Amino acid sequence: MKISTGERLIGRMTARTGEKVLGWASLVGVAVTAVMSLLVVPPDASQGNVQRLMYVHVPAAWLAYLSFFVVFVASIAYLATKRIRWDRLAAASAEAGVLFTVLTIALGMLWGKPVWGAWWTWDPRLTTTAILLLLYLGYLAVRRLPESPARRARWAAVIGIVAFLDVPIVQLSVTWWRSLHQGPTVRLLGQSTIAPIMLTTLLVAVAAFTVLYCYLIVLRLRVGRLEERALAEALSPRIGVPVAEVVEESEEAVARG
Amino acid sequence: MTLVRQAGTIAAKDLRIEVRGRHALGTILPFAATLLIAFGLSIGPGRTLLRQTAPGLLWLAMLFASVLAFRRSYEAEGEDGALEGLVLAPIDKAAVFLGKAAAVAAQLVVLWAAVLVLVAALFDVSLGGDAGIVVAACLLGTIGLAAVGSLFGVLTESPRAREAIVPLLVLPLAVPVLLSGVKATSLALAGLGSQAGGWLALLVAFDVVFLAAGTIVFEYLVED
Image (tube, rainbow over all chains, first blue to last red; front, side, top):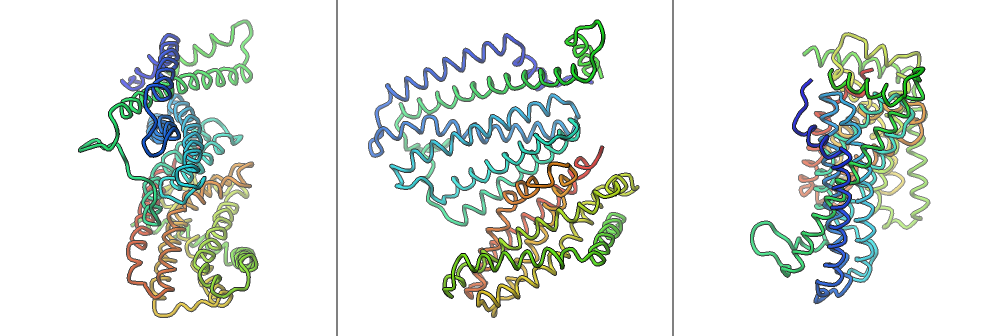
């Protein structure tokens, strides 16, 4: 079996040094984001200090969608290659995605109450995000079923693919249904309607949270490996040989194909 | 061609089970009727409000009832290792998916007919001139629901999934069907059927995406 560039990159990131670098980088990034968004940037002209929530809300929303896209890609990769590491990546990313989705919704509600006057409105993006959360809670529920690991991984992969395909249709249907959310203020092309310092802070926040996402994934991947190791230990203790070696042998065997 | 014939055989088998067991008729139809009565009671006897909410209640009742139909469709396969037999049979896995979807869709169409009559009677709704739009929305919605249900009904095989997993997966996935169906039906009931084209197109898109996705990924759900 050949090892692809993507797998090699993930391998590099999941090594202990990579994990430490990511941990420190995300700590520094989040600290810089906190300082910039709380102290450096002035409050919004019309919304006041409440608007500072945006510096977490927007990165969290971006990461929620990114996480579910990673679940989608990893699910396809798992079905295509049947390598368990893709399943572990999908699981890790789905958990991070649910976390960021909850964060997005919670911060959005905190912001919506003073600005829109309501905790919740049936706006397309809000509704789509809520449905997204439900879809992936279902995905995680399937992952918790007491099934054989291979079967669970296949079921989860199918749901990871189908759920992601559903997102654009949900988005379209809810948008036609009604629309209230404020228009996008950052555009890739043309004039943005945001002050440069606010944009800089937002981009720093997005970068910091993306690094944090990578760190969470890397940690979760290691926990996933340890879980499997513990399971293997419980299932097949080999007398006189430390379990870690047995597992490493078998992992090497798997890597060799 | 063989795919269609194989799917037809599977569908015929499922429908034969249904005709002999009368599960949809005996359990699911009364369940849908109970839901409609409960909705009616909770919303109260005001005629205007009932008439306004009728499309939504109609689709909700069908959505919940169809979840029961999906589970039933695979419960029969769980007995005596029937699903293993299907998986081992020398036919395309996609044919199993399409056949089961077709059988569920056929049952749901019968259910629709009964539930539409019930809604018309209970909520004082007349289908009127745009009945064609309502029927089209029902049929298109049924295809999409059947595709989703025939895909995730497999999870009923898991001992713990029997309870809530299938509805937890199917209901959020089917949100576009619910929205488009309700919107198309309300437009048709309001005599604005000509504006429902976009919603019907969305239903077609949902059907195509889920039939295609199901045909491709179904084999991964059942292979062991």
